[in-house]
Image (cartoon, rainbow, N blue to C red):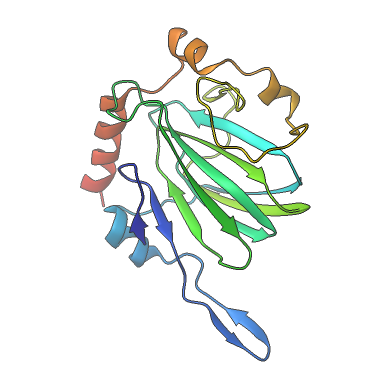
Length: 199
């Protein structure tokens, strides 16, 4: 596991063991995760999405606490996965980082509580799995419009990106901030510190 641009965000590059049958890998390993991140990952739910090419999902986030951390992998095809720092008061507030995840590399991406998450299907079809630290709770979960020009996320050029009705109706980044939807940096830091203390 290697740290990426933002504190607490990690990329996991598994060892691929191919042979004449195919390939074997450890896609998630609890002790490797805990050694890198500083706390365990408590799995509460696993989601799988199948998206056609050009589909954009996100930008999604949840109230902190407890938030919802995600460990994301692409099982078929490829995606551009984007993490957005939406923590009000963060020194990198409004910035993003992007990583390509694919069925060939089997790379995993860990996104801690407090960050926004979105991805775009780069292949004709993409199957994505998310390990989640908390179950789905519609009252705590929110979105930001992924095509908001103020965020200027680096989506691949596409004539007509495919969005859900919910994502298309999501507020802009500035609207989400003004309405008090966005998580607070200090609150997120304190929550993650509590996870490390209880390890």
